[in-house]
Image (cartoon, rainbow, N blue to C red; front, side, top):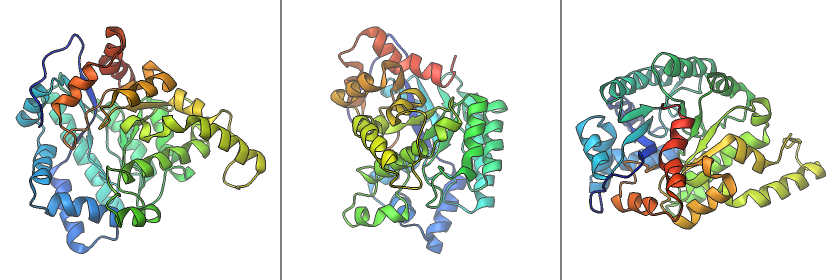
Length: 349
């Protein structure tokens, strides 16, 4: 960690995009790397984190696996009252169907046990295996109804497939029925996107993650997912993967493209793309402790739609917490940002 310890605040700091991993998952990941899995994104990301001897990946692996004293100590040092935990990307989504289903169950059980040990400090999102959409919907329901988890984590594409395909929509139906959000988290870009990024080292968090996730969210919008499931709630990290900055152009070009009947896949929607962003999407600040961008998102998305996140352990900088404590907004607005927006969205109270 860089920076001095962070003191208490007159609000709870709830960090909403905080990662964990299980030893079982890393064992499966190592097996995939040994077999040479056909996924450039996975090879790039986890070939580095699991095989590199450098200090940063070693520290991150250790912190991902810790759901006890070390994590709590890190939270105390940075003034974080609660973490909303989710299985780190790509989670179960790089595995074969049977292995993915089994891992989603065991990871959710392990997460629920950690929350039970520290209920005031941890909440969590359920992993599920979109490889089997019906099982995914059932596991999301089990995670919420039986384990007390607060939503679901979707690590972008599933072996290069995006969830705008209606075969996956039983997952969204379950989330809407349960009235819980789906956090659409980045993963390495799909095969169709990654090569030009990989050539220049841009496939990860520096750029590629956001591009792939923004694309996924837009595919969901233009496919009519939110027309079919109008109460579905989607969360995007990293200040909406830049989509809030594109709202005007998205509306203009979507309208023009639909009117021209250019693409068979792009049909009229009930609302503008920006309407779905403002009504169905929430954004968090994970890895984006930059006041001009945060305030822009609050302005165009609404104060109720922007939530704090750290992106632990990948981003673990005390000064970033202080930066967001010092946002030039009122105490009431800062309390929404750090605490009550998360409490409402994830039903923490």
